[in-house]
Amino acid sequence: MTDVMVFVEEDKKSGENRIVSISCVGHANYAETGKDILCAATSMAMHILESGIRQQMGIPCVVRTDHNKGEWEVEWNIKDAVRAAPFAEVVADALGNLASEYPDHIKFSEEEML
Image (tube, rainbow, N blue to C red):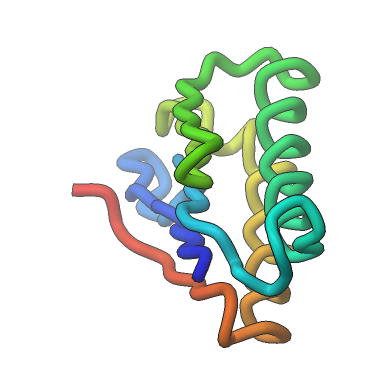
């Protein structure tokens, strides 16, 4: 099972919750390693997130990966959350849609940063 976690933090200026991190942990186990389309889909979404935020938007971010465990997290500062939103919201929606379509393989949650 892949656990997708979208972390939000309250923007003190606007009072709105903003996405500040997206994490995917674990293997979907939809198919054997190397042929799992759900693992490929979540990996591609995370590639888009990292590339979009870091390379296209120029936003500093922390990236943590462990490919053996199937872990990938991209995190940025709340001050950059509005600029990161176009990529973060699209990727969060896409991963949420995958979880809705394949609930036995992907679990989606949104959590507040403490």
